[in-house]
Length: 464
Ligand SMILES: Cc1cc2nc3c(=O)[nH]c(=O)nc-3n(C[C@H](O)[C@H](O)[C@H](O)COP(=O)(O)OP(=O)(O)OC[C@H]3O[C@@H](n4cnc5c(N)ncnc54)[C@H](O)[C@@H]3O)c2cc1C
Image (tube, rainbow, N blue to C red; front, side):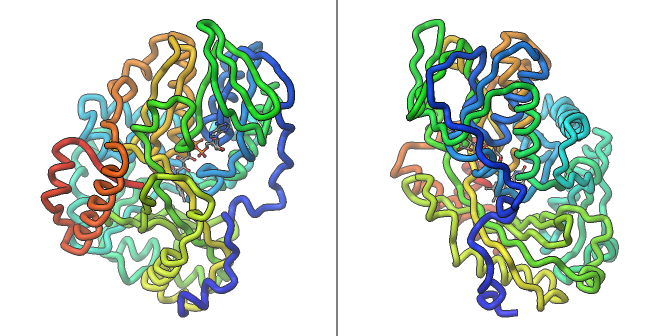
């Protein structure tokens, strides 16, 4: 189908948030109050932090402040790939922390197991399906990349199955596939908005005071207590955790380390049984192709296909703006790629199109830290892979606040910071040259130009 026609009736809003089950917001903070811990941000980072703070110590008085609605930002707009990796994939982790990769992989799997147990414990229904992720190669050079770490994968005991062309097409039938690698238990598919709302419910049940539409505008530290001001109220506490993603940070230093990168997605109408049978997909894996500019896609519980990725857009100046949530040029491109991948679905139309902003840092995986004499902690920089990893980051923040040394806080990954981005306008120039070079690499059998090789040597990069 012509992409323009296929998109004609697609709503301009995130599919997951367009759900009658979306709960009414909790009341604004409209007075002065005090608490033992204030969590800022009602995405996955903040929700996990508040929930686990209460699970660690039920007597703790916890306030969560969200500027808009719970889960409205990246948390309610993502692909719903809940991955074990804490390092934005094995290759990135291995490159940066080879000496601790076995621990990082183990801790990532434990984190995903714990997420699954939390859903059971708090009775959260978010269509969690631990189907794994199928990494597919659509160009010969991508096959080499997939096979590169097979020895290490078996050494680490990871549950990956290499698939040749026939086998991968036996799983999911696309004429574009040349081979694949099925990471079988390291990834689950879920409905991210229903997870966020379920975590909110669990927080409320444990006694967390949740205030939505309560943006924190300023922060004052008197040496022992921190006071956070919202437009209609304030809260004072000895401890603060920031889970504010890529939004203008309350801690100025963070703006050097994270940049807003926009990522876009489409949702199809539900496939009929006959349409689904033409694709196969009996094992319902999430799929990612192996280009630098990659697509990610998956089935929903009612057999729609979420189709996203490819363009990772940095708007010069580095601002977060509502108008950037829509990008027709990208939607048309994505729709075209969808039909190239699944020509048998030529009659399928799209019902939703949306974008969201990603907290990209130069090492692609989250970083953590403390300020104000250890009274304030933060975790950000998940670079498009935070659905699962935010729970680990929340645990790191709670460890740091408690002052305890744990296996997590001893990690080099936790102690080190990414290389900062240069200030604007140099930042925009550097990022756009990098984006251009990445696109060139995809068109030239993955060959990285001088610029990308120089960045690789410095341990710097750009991704979504
Ligand atoms: C299109 C898209 C697809 C993605 N796909 C995947 C995927 O499949 N798998 C995966 O692992 N990751 C994916 N991601 C990334 C993932 O969604 C994020 O890593 C994760 O949701 C980050 O959660 P967060 O809580 O840190 O940030 P956010 O969800 O951005 O939440 C931050 C919250 O803080 C609030 N806030 C900020 N400042 C203040 C303030 N001053 N006062 C009060 N509140 C404040 C904001 O309003 C916001 O609600 C995707 C992201 C996008 C955009």
